[in-house]
Length: 128
Length: 185
Image 1 (tube, rainbow over the protein chains, first blue to last red):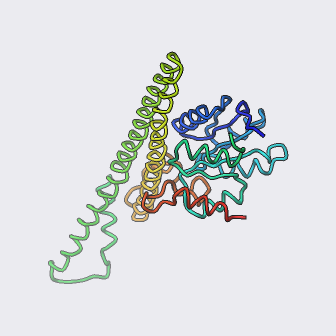
Image 2: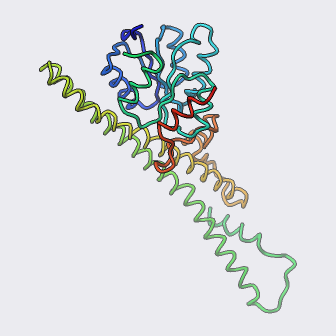
């Protein structure tokens, strides 16, 4: 099944620069419906209002981290199936393991490029 | 105020049982007072002036790089808009050309995280200096320190896993992360 490029995508990062970068790369890949949040709390609130087809989140944010967010999402009956990609500077093996066990579908370490993002998106959503 | 208290701290080095007819025997104690006083002044200067100044400068760097990154991204967006006006293959080529610039602007996030980590460490040092000076009775002011400015110190996120970007030579690359990610059940 083809990826729905019109589906809402939520980008979560406390650095506005990163939100702009990820949003730009997503638009370049064809996604047109992109929202953003500055931390896990704001993201979770938005997820309660809109049916997102994908969440791309940083880990290191205050007050609610990306790890807290994915745990909350996976624990929520309505949101638990939402594809979730962690994009973070945290690259230690223990971080990767904890994130995977918490339920992230893919893990991208910063800095990254457009090709890596596309490859991970394909892995989670299917080829497009 | 600080000087007097610093001297008071040095007074605690005086042994009340000490007796001697030789006045020179007291010399080490006098030197101890001076050393203690100088140390006290040094600690207070570091705590109240040097560390806040360093944190302020680091905050300026974060703000400055963020502003610069946004300017770069604005310029890229303007180029892309121009490409859209022209349309066709040129628009596509411009979009492809600016993509590495967007990717490179990740530096601001990574630099910001590193600087935030350093700021928190400075906040921790300030806190320890505060404890040290209080322990010695040097300073009893109402200076609350930089813990509040620095977000409460390392670990304030309540997540001990967060270490920020690793040194490039020690960092795990994406391919290794992919392998590990695939192995976790």
